[in-house]
Image 1 (tube, rainbow, N blue to C red):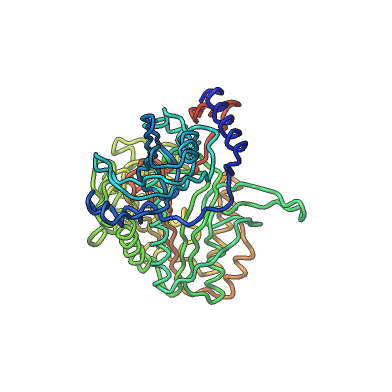
Image 2 (spheres, helix red, strand yellow):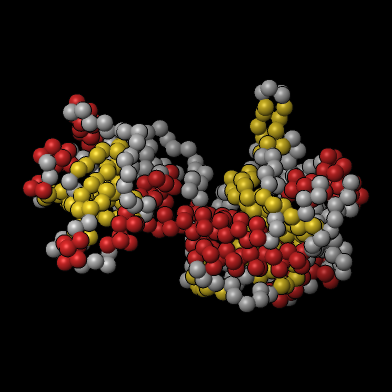
Length: 503
């Protein structure tokens, strides 16, 4: 945008003010939504509209202007719906027509007048009176239309939403998905709660936290990395079914699947285990898909994800064996597993433990191929310090992850409720931290104290809302489903031309 364009708009704003026009009024008089106007009149032909002579008042943003001297057309947009407005000099008061000529693309207006159809059959409101609702001093850049610069779109999402119907639809689908998730859990007797975002001890996941400081208390605090330990405290306190939909923060890298600030739903159900949570997960995700997009067949990056039917449940051992021919349980330790990996002509890397190598084998050779909904169960217990060990094999945990489109959508456990075992797990994590594991779980004595009061068998589940939204909207990057994804800082002056700044 040139400074000259901005200067011209500023001059128009001042001219309107000098003419006594309130260019930023606080109140809008009554009007009908564009969606309701279309619903009422879209099916009516020219003759019907002439006979009925309906009048209306509408409001919205001017997104396009066409001028033919004594005739002007606006494209008005409100609530995601557009409608044409005509300004005919012979049908308007001179002052009203003159006001209309002073307005620009981007301005907000209220228009009153009859509804008619043009010669081309376009449903139109013929302006008789115009009220300025807000003046746009900075124009919407023409080059924005069809712009493919992702950095610019994400930095100035407000322009993306105006120019790109796809961006708006993604936002709507994500919102419908969260609404459906909430209604599903409410219908199953879960209580929605809030737990602390600022925590004195972070926990509930393997991740590095963001650290902040409370000046009044002189105390370092952490942005939570998970809701888990506080939600389980509530189960201990007798709230048998609880959930929270909120933000977590992890001081980690950024990728197409990761953002340091993300939304998650965590729920906990007393008297349940991970099998029960698999049933709950499958039913909930089917419900969400049906409510958010109206189908259980989801197009995703050139394929179709089928959510109908019963989703397969595979152990991590069986999944790795099928993909690589390696039986992870046949190896006693990391050296034995490395040898088995090499026998298959694969690179074992430098994983320090059997559990980490198992996880790497799965991530490299299984996860990318898990396109259709699939539950992967029985993860190494060393990587699952908050889960109960398997009743069949103590080396693995009663845990599952749900995969779609080659990525993890959710994670769940039979929650560890033995305080002695949980303490041992925390102590093992402290040892790992001392050996350099920056993501090791800290010791949480208050949680252990709560657990010693007794927690019933409990199933817990976390669903990543961003990744779920990616699947529902056929998007390959998590930044597409976040209205304001985290971005690197711009250099001074970048973005003044409509948002095309340095990434």
